[in-house]
Length: 183
Image 1 (cartoon, rainbow, N blue to C red):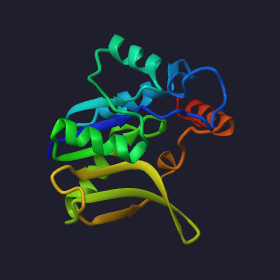
Image 2 (cartoon, rainbow, N blue to C red; image 1 turned 135 degrees about the vertical axis):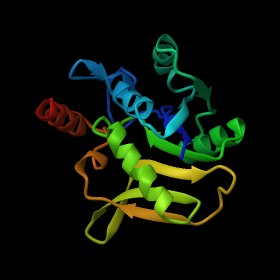
Image 3 (cartoon, one colour; image 1 turned 90 degrees about the horizontal axis):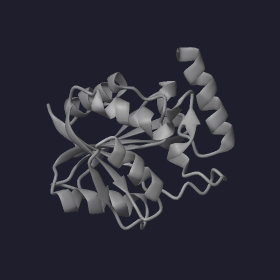
C-alpha cells in the first residue's frame, strides 16, 4: 500500500519560549524537523510527501526549500484546519499525517502504523498513548481525504517514541537525552 504524507510544520510553537522557530532547534546536531523528514522520506509505504507550513514559520519554509522538500503553505488557522486545508487543496486520499516535533519516531515506526491501518476498516486511524484512562494523541494519524467525516480507529501504543513531542524546554532536554542513548 502506497500513501501520501503530510508533515505538519506550521505551528506557532508558543509553549517553547525562545526566539527560534521551534522546529529549527538543534537536537544532537540536527534540526528538530529533520528527524521527522528523515522518518517520512525513509518509509517504504510513502510515495510522496509535503511539509505543511504557515505564515508562522517562514524560516522553516526557507529550510525546507533548501532541502528541496515540497511545501504546501496553509493559512495558519490551527492544526486541524490546516490539515483539512492541505488535504482538500492537494485532493489526496489516504494520507499519513505527522507533527514535525516527534524526533524519536523512525521510518519503521511509521511502517508499523500503516500496517495497523491496513488491518482495520475505518477510514481514519489515530495513534494514541494511554495515561490512566485518558487517550493522549501522539500527532501521528492516517486519514482518507476522500472520507474526512468517516469513523476513526484509535491505535493505542506504549512505544515511547510516540510519547514525546517537543513542546517545552523539559521535553527538549528529554529528547536530547533519549537521542544520545540511541546513538
